[in-house]
Image (cartoon, rainbow, N blue to C red; front, side, top):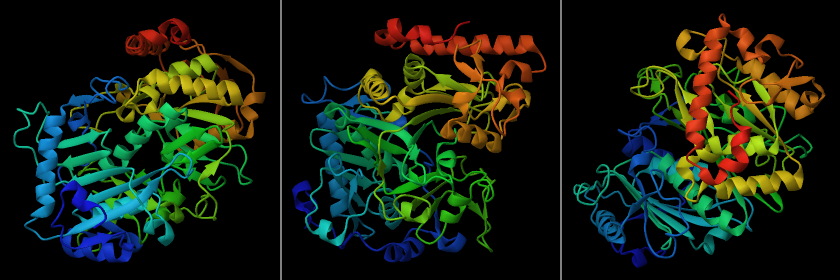
Length: 533
């Protein structure tokens, strides 16, 4: 049935293929410990893992792909022998599940452009995991479902652990392993839904660039008339989802896109938004998307009233909600259009600089854009992860290093080619701190100020502004913008002590240089676009 026998799954029990969300919700509430939350959204906990487990992610080292991959701490090698051993354990679990849960099977698509999409199949034992897939991937029509053949399959066996992990050369009993040649991945030990989403994203990041299509960890929206598409790159916590979900501009997607010779296109059929400190007034579209069909993860709620406290991060700072694009009324999908657009006029790199050094906005040349794209800088602050007590610089190449199987220059060179061909303008926007570092008690740049900056970029007002060079990176910084306090546009002037700024700027500049030394192939051309101090 559905080719399960080919994988050795001969005793699956009931196979629930692409069940309607309402039926999945019944099982979530009855079998998965879910609770009915705001406006009919379901609330679930994801077990001991409330985020991805990058140290437990491996790729099988085999002859057809080994020379192409960017091996190292992001893409760790594992042997085919270990993969086969764990696959056998996963299949055995599916054939002899003592709980008798049967299988939740999701067949769908990744990629709104059929010229560059793949058919995905995901097997799961928990109803909410199938619900998550229904939200995040593109759901096929009934006609498409009849002829659906998977191009890549993930078997999620989150209850299975590898007791021999040390012998197998893994980092724990949890495993997320991809066999690119066999177009198959297995998951054990982690319930977190994001492993499935980002797993398929990694597959796209492997396949598309080899075809000359740039795959990107970014959000995208467009003007109401479908023109002036914009891309928003940024790591978690920089505001990518919040700033791209704009009531004035239809959303294309909030996280994963491709850029082909025809334009940009969304990979996904939904959004996966952080909800820690969610504010109805500041983020109305995300707030209103939390209704029946949405799936909240690891939020804290009152056990009697079931009211969610979005400010409570005691379970995790990574509280999340997944929902289909149809829940965003001002999205291309919800208005009947395809989640795609032409070539972007505007590209925005988002960084939450916790050191208070980056200007709120800078204009980048193509060379500077490549430098900052490869750097992929943001910063973590105290409280966001266990053990972090002060600001910590984070560099993630292409703003998505954990999901990039190929060398970073592969993606950067594709970006350069697109920028030069289409004349897209690139800006670096700091959504972090001003007037000092986060550790000093300084305030984060308000979302209102950032939205005004984004508006100036998208309307072209920033191109009319008088600019001067930033003393740290040499980027052009506007002296004034409509609706923005001009004082914040020059970071040094917002600090109480200029020398303290200079010392912090020199420290951050050193971190940039140290990080960029990892990419010697890019050094000669791009290093001059880095720090000047």
